[in-house]
Image (cartoon, rainbow, N blue to C red; front, side):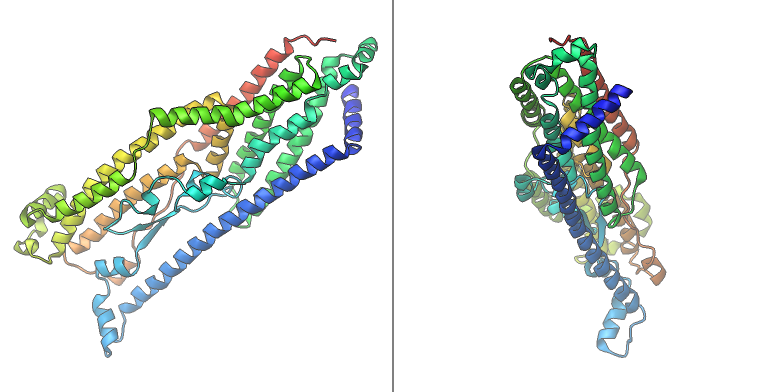
Length: 474
């Protein structure tokens, strides 16, 4: 313990005398602060847009409520009173929104979810190829990237660790102080380990401090989630531990400072550039996603074919698919402007397009599942999945949101059809009980995240075990 304390104080004093290292640490910390600000601003824009949507919806909703007591003495008031409670009018004037709100830590990790629209318009006539159902990409965002704290941690944290640690052993050898330490009976490997621990603590404190600042910033926008914060700290600690294990292995090879720097930079390029690009190319090659234009063509063709069906066949199909409405069947159902005819049209079109979209999403889900499996071979990629999973900003979360939107849209259609088929209006009480969308996080999400964190620690321990078997050459 005395030796560790001596080395700790010596390294701290040495650090304060190296202006370049202090500038490097300051640059890293300033970069982290800017990434938090950038994520804060990005999330703030989303929340402002969501607030605007909710405000507009509530304003229109109050107008719908007021129409039930409109002044029928005027022509405008009479029109509003007559339209009050009509399902199609409610949908047209004030469509419902399914909103995917930012998570507590979305400020720190902007993911695939943020490259797509985070709200969906819910009506019986949902457009299956609208923006939120288009390809999961945003050219501008994909080109510029997301400069958030997760990016700083995954890409820049290893670089500063390498810059501070690559020569802790080779420097002793190049200055020939290693032999002096050996003559005094001091174990060089222990001294090296203590130096690495000091640097791990130094960089870890910076990463944890930046994270805490991010937590506070995020809490100003979204309610704080302590479980997610703990998982975040564990995740970045595991990632940092992995990189210090790699550094420990490289410097145990007893090469020169130049060789150590080259090996470590090569390792950084391998894990953060080459391997992710290679895995991504392989996944996209063997599990491609078809163009969304196929769905657009299917929508147009199905719209035309369903509308061209004989009315009796269309109505028969509707009652076959919805037996609970059979007792409401009437001869007027097949008339030109029958509400049941339009309900039957949208019902059959929705069923056909749901099958098309489900088939399309199957490719995205398969590609995402394979990419997640491949991520286990790369700790850097796995860390990105972990951090996005904690912030609920990954592709998996977006696909889950889309599935929930599709389920909710069916619920909305069933709710409105109960009134349309029966030729009834919604009462004021019914209007206040409209279905509401609420996004639900995936089950066992934290369990999967914990497995990923344990994986990172296990990889680090395995590398250290291999490194300790290497004998340091003096």
